[in-house]
Image (cartoon, rainbow, N blue to C red):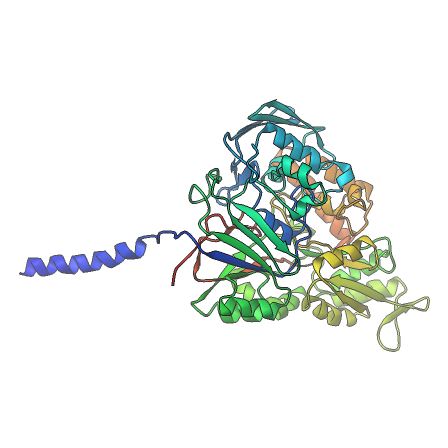
Length: 534
């Protein structure tokens, strides 16, 4: 009897542990509704670099390769393997066979060549800021499953770009709809296919049942689990949060700090946090317009910001997840070649005042500085409230009057292009990228105008030289040294005003399982996501 009782006790102890360790079985079906704050511009990976667009079209289009979050190495996707020539100028990709676009046309080497050529067609003014602009030469179709990409010179970030930005569109669909309208009728090879886009309301995708070529780093094979994927555009924070609480949506991006703090204490909701490599939340200093064409003014603005207070005031709840830390330099700490030696501007309002005094900006009767009868007014554009208002109050203490312009991401982008503000929010920001060459997209002189993202309008020959050198340096140690020089130069000249690491803070219903962000912490892999039944 004693032996029998001992056996039962052991069984009772073991069974709960076994049940607890068993992973739940994914369920098929249902609609996952994902709320975005901002409207995409177009669903065309060859031409668009706007983050809301990428969140959507990354579900429609596949890349050739992908970076593994765990080991940071590149793994196959539409390409099964690849090689690079000894001189670093030619990449040869072997492609998967049997892959079909959503329109049933074949994905092959000719399609890859079409995509690379189209991305680099100057007439189309691509906003693919992470692509091989200035380096791509041509593509060669070797056979149906082999393509060679020729570069004009070695470009160190090429594989990183291939894993993120070169996503394959259907050549037949582009021919059918035209270059400008294709972004409203996207056709790719991804796990979800396009159904409709109702502007300022929603975009609907549905599962591509024939899909059977996921990257090996993903969790299952075959088609996606959810039947439909709906992206709702809900710009108002309160409305987006309310939609999550009522079950109208299952995921929201840009979760407000106060609601994030409240809802993460509720078991019905869970945080989704991505710590993002690349460029932090920076303001582009317009070096061509007064008053930020003066180095002293640009530096004074950087010395005059109490960043720890800014992030604690606006983003306090996020910081317990390690997110939204103060930023003082050009890259986030999660980025290869990040150089803490470029973090030059810790809070020192006394230094700000001394700089402005020396530059002839003297305090006026109301405390705002004046020179030559002109007040020190700095217009700042942003797409959200919170941080700009705190900055406005802090900079007033050093004698700077800040005028705020709050608009959507696309509107701020237009403002930047028109150079209507002295300090403008680089749009889109942050610039998530696992390779630091993103600096070139933001500050190389070739990216001033013509669809580029250099909204500081910097044309610095020494900076261009450093950026060009790092781009072709394949030795990682040497490349990091060059990038460190570039970071120090940019911050010394105060071409950018760093404020904080703008990480990806989202919220989801606990019913959403296996939803993860990719290697740069910004773009969701919805393919593996599934919904629990209640």
